[in-house]
Every structure is written in C-alpha cells, then in structure tokens.
Length: 197
Image (cartoon, rainbow, N blue to C red; front, side, top):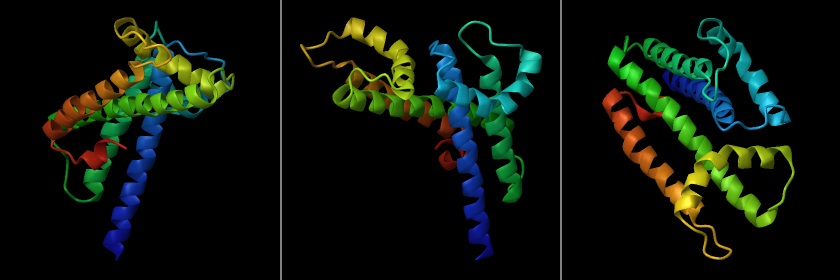
C-alpha cells in the first residue's frame, strides 16, 4: 500500500513538473513568435515562470532577439534534475549522463509539440465559432501559431473557404513527435512517462 502511494506521489510530482515545463516552453514560444508581451495571459506566464528563469538570466543574460536561452536552459535543467530526483527516490541510482541529456532534450521537444498541438486545436475551433474573436486568449493563440502556419500557407493554397494548412501542420507535429521525440526517448533509455505529459 505504501509503495503504491509513493508511486502515485512521484507521478503527481512528475506531472506538476511537466506542467511547469509546459509553461516554460510556452514562454519560450511566445517570445520566439513575438506574441504580444503585454497580453494579460503572456504576463501571467512570465510571472509564473520568472522565479526559475530569473536564476538563469543572471549568467545567460536577458533575452536577445527571438530566442530566450535562459528559459530553454531553465526547462532543460528542471527536467534533468527532476529525473535524477525520481531515480534517487525510487532507489535505482543515478541514470547515465548521456541518457539524461537526451531525455532533457526530448522533454523540451515534447512540450513544444504539445503546445503547438493544443494551440492548433484551439485555433481551428475558434475559426469555426468565433473567427474574429478579440479575447486576449484567442489573440495569443493566433500569434503563437502564425509563424508555423504562414510558411505552410505559402506552399498549400486554400481551396475556396477551406484552409488545408492546419491538416498539414497536424501531420507534421505528429510525425515529429512520433519519429524524433520517440527516437530520443528510446535513445535516452528512460521511461517515456518521465519525459512527457
């Protein structure tokens, strides 16, 4: 019974860490896509993630350009440390360093792909029910997905009222998730449950 409670507790902690990693990668993507920094939702994400990101901004410096290295580093270190902690708590000992590093990269990629996946679903639903929505959340989703949608739209023209680009992006997300992230997780030799949501 105690062992089952311990496992459930570890899985809960792992899930909470993955949710925080999700928020860190959302902050990274909002910066990369140049989304509105003053949007209330952007401000909330920055406020929640700043305590951890601030630790890395000290030596990696403030954001320069589109890519926030401090946020990436924060997510990577958080995930690697959490995997080490879980391994220590369950009594397996220290996982191999190469496996840990690969698992950290896989976790970041998994979180980024999940954010795009959910943002695409929200974007598609909004395009049906509220195509001209001005809610801060709707605007942020559009700003987030536009950098990955624009290049696809240039290649795949819409058929009248039907935009096929979201389908292509969905297929690409699933392929990258299955092939790249799946391969990284297998190469890491660490349970996929510890790596992603």
